[in-house]
Length: 140
Picture 1 (cartoon, helix red, strand yellow):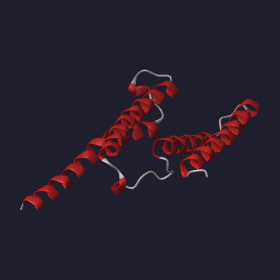
Picture 2 (spheres, rainbow, N blue to C red; picture 1 turned 60 degrees about the vertical axis):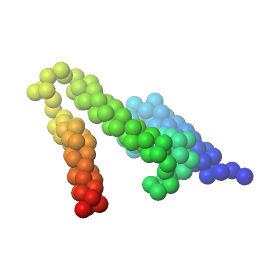
Picture 3 (cartoon, rainbow, N blue to C red; picture 1 turned 45 degrees about the horizontal axis):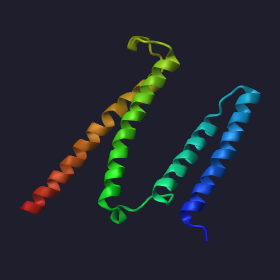
Picture 4 (tube, rainbow, N blue to C red; picture 1 turned 90 degrees about the vertical axis):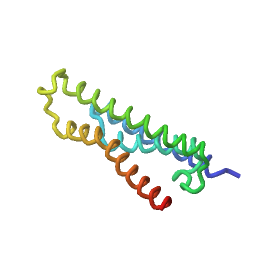
């Protein structure tokens, strides 16, 4: 009997293969990159790694995770945040072909990078305030 993990991995591989093949075919024949192919290929790769890591498409619920799994999630979240931020900055400068900030013309991407830059500190601030508030309530 196939497990949910094996089915999820197989379905993800089929999805990646189908969308990847279609996107490559369109790129080779029409010389265009299809944004939806890139998006859905990324989605398929994300599902594949989610299934390989946790064995479930939606991951484990918070109450079901042990300390090791919580640590893995926390550490990988922080690492992926910084990797994504660096990749966004590199894509901005490579796609614009400039080295000076004043020469950038892709203002929406600059705004997204700015928002990404402040997301972690703001989120940590809000979560720490809630945590400290709950801790103070327990002490009193």
